[in-house]
Length: 266
Image (cartoon, rainbow, N blue to C red; front, top):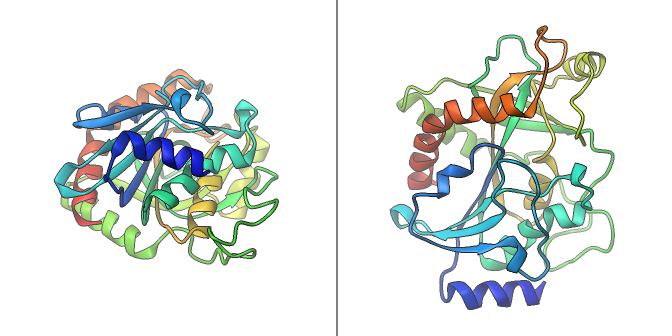
């Protein structure tokens, strides 16, 4: 971990990021217009390559509105064959670099019938259906306690700020519980029905591992899902990743506006 941190610090100098952002599928364009230092994952010791379409696979360091940011343009997924430790390694590096708040974004399918594609959902909680936990293994007491509390992974204060900001910008939003699954196959209608009964409102293939580790590290988390489609069985539509990217592109202006305003007040 020290090798990773030292390499990044050589690139960014005295820059100390305070806010981290993870950009999910189709949402990576947010960082493109920022004056920044860019470091490809491939160049960073300890990082792996991100192979998913819509993920650029690079760290972006920028300072819009006087806020020092570290942005992940793309993330690692369990379905790519990476371990939970690899998936969440960048979060631990963020902590070491000084990050205190993290905005995690993703593309997700709607389980709730009153959600619509292009809605933004602020995550109030999650259900981890990935069958693993990123905190398994030897604990690093310098990062967090062995048995961390998960009562409020997603900060209520940040959710309130996000809701107020969305209303100010006239952006339609939802709040709800995110079900995290392994992928890469989409869920079956029977699985979606089960998640619905359990109280989930949207489903996706990421976010929970990063949120768990961020909370463990003492980082405040805001989770935002871009609802890109209906989950299996909610409607008669056939699911595909192209639809996910297409809908994310449609909502990216609202998403950018929301993030820009949140950066100012967080």
